[in-house]
Length: 95
Image 1 (cartoon, helix red, strand yellow):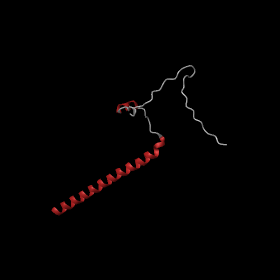
Image 2 (tube, rainbow, N blue to C red):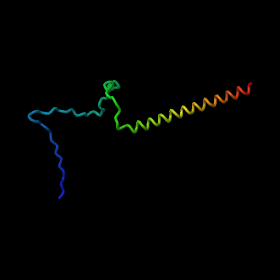
Image 3 (cartoon, rainbow, N blue to C red):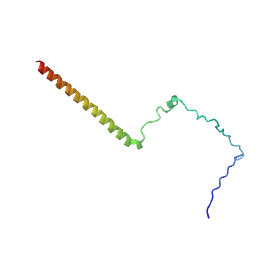
Image 4 (spheres, rainbow, N blue to C red):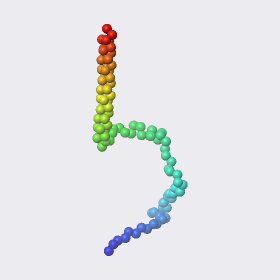
């Protein structure tokens, strides 16, 4: 024997002797109004620390940032060394 679910639509007239507040249905196809960027001002100072669930992301991003920093430093160091060697060779030839 199978059970069938029955859906019943009703309109609430009263709850405990009080009529419920009527909700307005949006019939226009427009999206609800959005706040502008100034609404974010209320969040200033609300976040005091980062969520601990995101620590793997911060570790990975930190490793990437450190790698980029070291790579840029190494490239600049090699370029500086090449320029110094070239200048010393030119000085030695011109003497």
